[in-house]
Amino acid sequence: MSNHTPAIGYVGLGNLGAHLAASLVRAGHRVTVTDLHRQAAAGLLAAGAEWAGTAREVAAASDVVFTCLPSPAAVDRVVAGPDGVLTGLRAGGTWIDNSTNDRSETLRLAQVAEAAGVRTLEAPVTGGVHKAAAGEITVLVGGDEALYDEHRQLLEAIGSPVLYMGPLGSAAVIKVITNMLAFINLVSVGEALMLAKRGGLDLAKAFEAIAHSSGNSFVHETEGQVILNGSYNIGFTMDLACKDLGFATQFGREFGVPLDLAGLTEQTFIRARAQYGGSAWSSQVVKLLEDALGTDLRAPGFPEVLQ
Image (cartoon, rainbow, N blue to C red; front, side):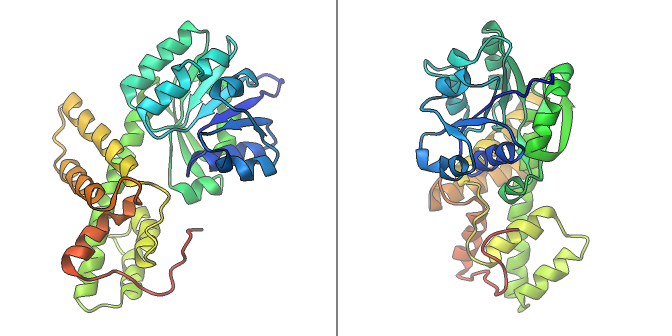
């Protein structure tokens, strides 16, 4: 980046976006934000961010606009819609998408942006909402490498490590792969804990044993805790899980890769969404097993909020 400190915009202040925007504010950037719900911005405004009524107004006040949105349709509406980012961002500006979006949609919107003189980077993030809150979430970047280099410092403000994956579309593929692994792992964590419970083990001791075993994983260490405390609150919804698993199985068909476990896991999540609702936390997928067996997976001593 040049010596000019860019003005930043952030659109989409959900479970993830609010934390990413807050990291930019903490890093000393002038940040203008918007969301469908103004109350989602309350903490950011108190920390010094500025509010704008629309994505267009955010873009008009910015050199670089980030988006973090829940679906391809939302990204399209916010970026290319009549009051969208591209109607307000000056030629030469940059749009950086933190959403987990459909790869073909990212490529299509990048062409629309290019026609408006706007450059595009995809920068989905992975590691969980608690990592985003701490500014320690992994940032996966796809796009022109020179453009990535120009914005690297800005990307490093929202997370670490920042990993350049290759041309536009590359980050979408690896993000879907990492989420696919996490969801498969989540279902297996539920089965493991249920085996422990029905086998008469103390679940807190079982959790610790798994954490120090060859069967340990990031998902066990994090989502295992919100299952055991009964909150299931991982800051990620069933709708989002089904969307991302849909992307994974779509890639499987496109690339000719049989995805036996991902396909089964997608069906399990679709069933959980039908049972508990799209806004239920994704960790509630293990509740299918709890309900089927009439056995809960509660254990004392696990925090309500992951640190």
